Length: 333
Image (tube, rainbow, N blue to C red; front, side):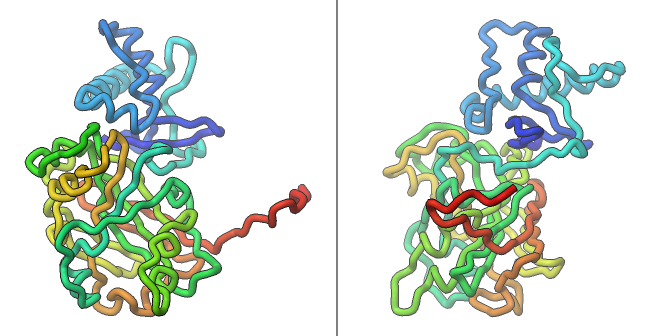
């Protein structure tokens, strides 16, 4: 099951991608399904977006499987998927679908730094005593149909592949023994940063300048429920730029595992459905270790990150398009 946010004709949809690559709007499809198969107390509103979906827990996943079976059965009978109201809920990719980041506005986004043995080794750093996290905001996220923006203020843009966890329950003070209960699914992250701004000469690490700029973290292309991924250790990971491998390894390289991270984070933070925790980067393959000139991105570079049993996220890098100065007249049509 591949859960997505997408836009078609300026209309937002929450849904899924079928094995054939078609798209289903789950909100409309769910209302049609319940109209044909009445269920007492059914709540189709859980299919508005990723956050409300995961708030419904395992029942949301179970209903989605029933909806997919319902659509497949009707299509086999020659029926065109359309709700009783006439609203469409089945779309083809060639119709111009734009995939968005599968994260709802307002979700909290946390990322692990210094969380793989290979990345620590290439930086010649000692392992941290506990999970070391920083945050991002919604302005920095892009989806699979968008591009990462290279800031004109940086001379050293760099990108890393990371496995990310999507939270499915509300919780605080969660012990490590229950940490995996908080996980709803997994997605792929391409975390771009500006190394010269992140590590200014003679200064402390600047996470906002290094990792907080607009359009600097790609998420997607979808979320796969944890039941379908299975054990997250090991999962093979590979990052390519223009077809050249820059990172390759698996998730056993991670220093802190999901249960420890959840326990550490929820000491003071209430995690909620739809929140995202990105587990950190691996080290680079020979020739692409941290800090090397070979890792610099340039406009037009094509970046592809693949994680086993989840999928591949592919985006391009482009030069930043500056906004006009405040008060300037709008550009002529």
